[in-house]
Length: 460
Image (cartoon, rainbow, N blue to C red):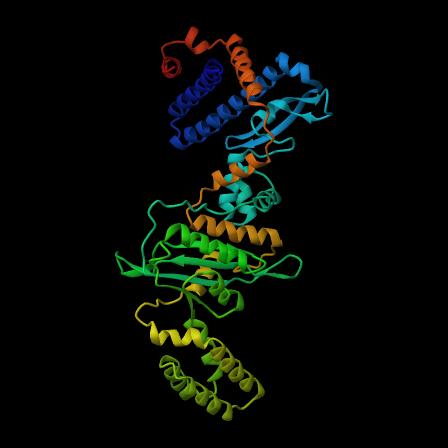
């Protein structure tokens, strides 16, 4: 196998040396040589892959065990595979089983290449990783393929989540924080998707630098277009129980805007209490007091002191001064919102020292909206769901290549291990028997190419 690689490398090294000499002779720029070198190195990669794929195909075709079970249907079907080096065109043999009427490219199957696969897994993973932050079109451009292929790769992914390991020693904390919100994403069919975002953290820590700032400590994200609330809260609770000693926790604060799906987290998360996000309180207060701004401070004072009677009285006064039906509706909405979520307001009075501010609105914007809804895009339901999951996956430190590879392996039907070992033996024999001449070694002068290839050979 190494002799074949040496042979390919030696041919290209000769061309590389020639080009370098031309740049020197013509007093060119180093970038001219670098550009040519990049192309040569990519060409080496493509040639090596093509050669090894076709040698593997030959080894399978010559294998006696294969002949007992599979017969040749077509001898030289062409396939083009996009790799990180470029397009590789190679030939493979198509077989039909003698007993089960199955059809397979056996050599491709040994390498996990599906019958109609046009993009190699490493390239696919890089496209997916790029698409987490960039458009499908931008992610496809470096590989000269369609944006449709990027979309298909993302939609086909399953189990997009960082697996939370069981800890031998779980963290011991008194208080834990959960914040939740959702994004609104326009769909191609005219509908709307509502990917949810739940993130768990241990409070704020100070970051020193040019300017001091706070950031959330040990944050874990869960996101996706979950149809109900049960699945997302079960995932949150699973993370908590695997990471923290639940017996040591005194309270888990769930912060949000009071939406029913957020409040339902109280039913799934042990020791949890609800905290109403002050950002959303302020939105209602501003609307309710737009016509009577002096009442705004009075209303906030009532909220901050958890005085329900004063809240009602202030809103009654605002209603008496309302000058339109829309003003009246805003006041009514505010009253309903505050009273329905009074437990989430009252807790500020009893737990003021341990509650931290909620940043759910900003996190939805940063984690989801930046990619899903801040630009006029039209998503498929599956695409929006998987993109939300991928964004959380990436923020949790997930490895996209391993994710794509694991999905490919799940789809793969493996040939028997004993057969794979026999093919490996035949492949080694086929490659060893090839009569490879490396002119730069056998006849060449003692030039840079000679020493480069000779060093490569001696290394093995």
